[in-house]
Length: 299
View (cartoon, rainbow, N blue to C red):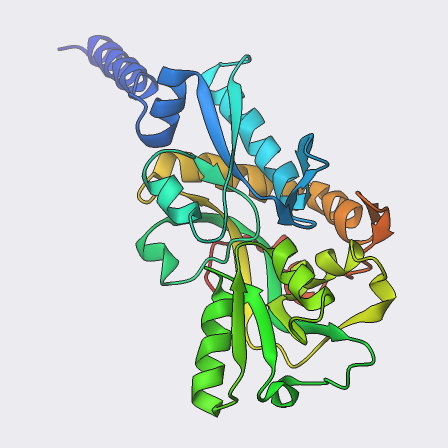
């Protein structure tokens, strides 16, 4: 066989291989979305400023804006400009179950990526890093965790904060009465009404609840952080194509600086519904994350 013929056959084989790769069938979530023409987002009622419902009309927030960018990338990749976006209300307790059973396809809110949850779901590159602390009445005399001995403390059911609080109570024999509610809004109402003296949660979420209080200046966030946690968008396990698409979107936002604008919008400027500024400066952890996007769990 002469060289020219051999070269021609090699080129043809390469083209055929490329065509085969291009025609590789969809799988997992992307296949489900392509077949149904619908993407289902798990949305939160009161995870201010990450994802929350604004007056029963629409969803807003930092994480929700990121999720919207992921939806746009799905539309582009699947060539579905009229893709239907369905928003399914979820809670901290049912979010993993609804992801696993196919009710939702992705959840971008305030969900911690940890090793325990990685057994049940996968996580995109991280979108936020927090510390777990407590919110208390400014003049209530509580400065740190030891001051909670024998008192009522509220947290949100199904969160890592609930697990940490119960472990601390047992290990340190603090005798706290732990109250668990279904969402962050109810937890804050429990604090605001005096049924609890402290509300334990991720610091950024505490600042979000404080911003919608009747008198925000009545409340302060105190206590040594009990953990550092990374938030990611949660997707079904072992779905590499959808994770790759989502990771690429998040990395792109960090590399081109768009994420800084999003952060300033939700954490350093007035946010609805009351137009209050959370005044939550960008931490060193967040600056490092933006420079080096990753999907690492911190615990």
